[in-house]
Length: 131
Image (cartoon, rainbow, N blue to C red; front, side):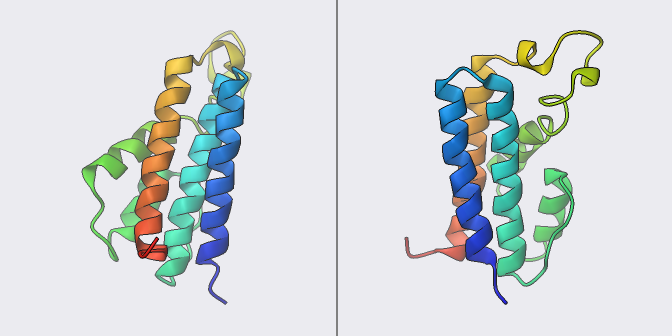
């Protein structure tokens, strides 16, 4: 069964949720949610190409997709930035001291929203080309 649209819809929903986190000043969770949105968008592409993807490393997911599509440098850069938000946004032991809530700034979250949007648009261009 083709599940690309389901994965893409979830990516879009998480990106919207990240906006709510941003508006409420939850920078670390906004960053993490953007990473998750991008991950799901890439997994949507994997489903679209009938090549299911596993794992959380956005760079590795992109490498697997490069067999099917040219990956724009902007998407690669966005994934490289978002990839850094998978663990340290959630776990205090990612830093010598301080909670993740203290480690991320509004500018980090703003960039994460832009990066996730770029990855989602890239996935949409294959899965929903006419929209």
